Image (cartoon, rainbow, N blue to C red):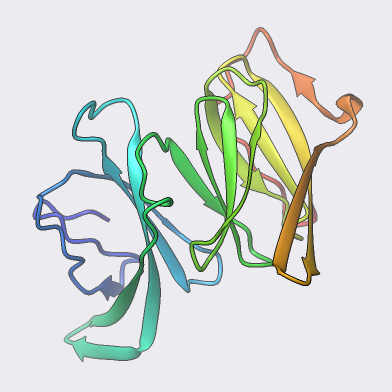
Length: 193
């Protein structure tokens, strides 16, 4: 829920402490990670409010909570990253495994870890991405664009001497499909993947 005063609440019984919003920016969307540890907040782009968003990522602190009546207040910590907070983000999705997050804009997808560290960026060839979703095991990403073409991308994460390396490759084109007569706005995996 987003209150009129710009404060963010999640779930009906747990309230997130007031997130600072000194510029009184419009909060367009909030996305909670499947494990409940991270919250992505998308703010309207002040230059073009209807077009794209900028994102702030918060780590939710359940050790710092208080109870007031039937409401639990929890704390948060901003995960600061200027690259992550750039404009032109249309949406975000979290993986339920491997601490990955995907942001998307136009025809590109960027992968981050939940510490806000950039991992990879790739062009999908899609026309105006509408949504992305991680497979439950975190090893694939489904992407749907304005043209109702659904693509699946393989994600391979490995450690090297300098840290984490994330490789992306388009899954066999036979696994992608298009529905030209139907407009698709959302894509999800079932629990089995």
